Image (tube, rainbow, N blue to C red; front, side, top):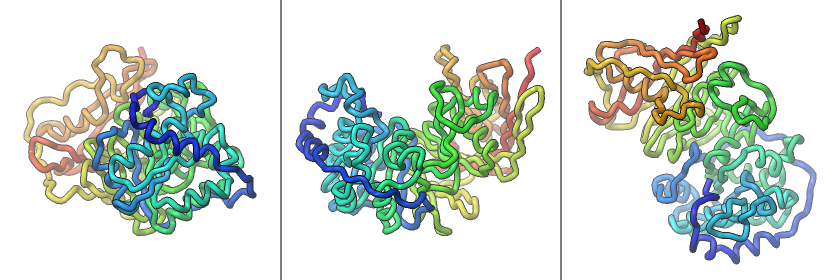
Length: 433
C-alpha cells in the first residue's frame, strides 16, 4: 500500500483529476449476472509491495494496454475512503482510496501511459459502481489496475456485497477483459481476481492448527475465506499474495486442502504473474520480476486429522522465477530459455530451519523460509530430503521436502539455482511431550 509514502508532486499534479472524478453522478441499476470465467485478455498480478521504480511490471501493463496510447483506469476501493482517513488533507501522509488512486495514476503516466485516471468507486461512493457516467469512463480505458488494501472492500463496492453480483462498472471491466484488455492488480488487487474460496485472512501456523472457516474475521491470524470468491478472472487455482515475505504457504495449503482445490498460485512481492487468455484452454502464465511464483500441486494430496493434529501428504512444490512459464492445462513448468538443469554439487548439509513460515511471533530477527530450505536442498549433493519446522511448538509442525528426480533446480549458472520443480512436500504434526 502506498498510503504512508511521500507523494510530494505526484498528488498535486492530479488534484484536478480527483475533483472531476468525485463529481461524477451516480445512477443505480439492476445487478448483472453472477461472475463467470474470463475469456481472452490478460492479467498482470503482483503479490504486493510493487515498487515505484519497477519498470518491468509497469511497462508490461502499459505495453498490454496499448503502449504510448495506453489509458489506464485505476481502482482503489480496497483502501479506506477519505471519510475514514485522519490524514485525508495531507498529501504526504494520506492513505485513502482517492489519494492512492491519484498516486497510481501519476505513476502510470510517469512510466509512459498516455493517460491514467482514478475510477471513483469506494466506500464513500458505492453508488458510483452503477453509474452510467463511470461506466463510460471505464469504456474509454484500455487497461485497468486494482490497488491493495482489503479485498473485501472490492466485494462490498463492485460485487454488491452479499449479493455477489456484478455492478455495472465491474460488468464493463469484465467485458473489456473478454475483448482483450489487460487487468492488473497488486496485493488485495491481485487477490480479488480469484474465483471460489478467496482467502480473506490468516496466518500459516494458526491455519494448520485450527483449519479454515468461511467468513471474514477481525482476528488477522484466523484463516478465513469467501466461498463465493472474488471477481473470478483467474480460476485455475487459488491465489495468495505476499507469499514468501509473510510465509503464507502453510495457510494456502490448508485452505486448498479444506476446500478441495488442487492448485495454488503463491504470488511474491514486487513480481508479476502474467496470465494470457485466462479461463481458456490456451491459458498460459509467465513470471516477471526479481522474486518468483510458488505453485502448489495438490492433485495427489491427502489430508489427515487425528487427536495429534493435522497432516498433509502428496503435495508437490514448484518455484518459478523471471522468464519461466507455466501451463495450467497440462500442469507443466517450463524454465526460461537459457536456464539449464543444475546438478547438485554441494556437500554442506541443509541448514536448520525453525521458522519455516515466517511466524509473526518470532522476534529474534532471524527469520527463515520454506524457499530457503528448498533451495538449500536443491544445492545439496548428499541430501534427498530436508525438514523444517514451525516456530510455534504447541503443537509443532514439520515440513519435509524431497527431491523426486535428478534435476529439480534450473538456472542460468550453477551458482544460482533459482527455479525449482516438483519437490515432494509433506506436513506433519509433532506432538509435544
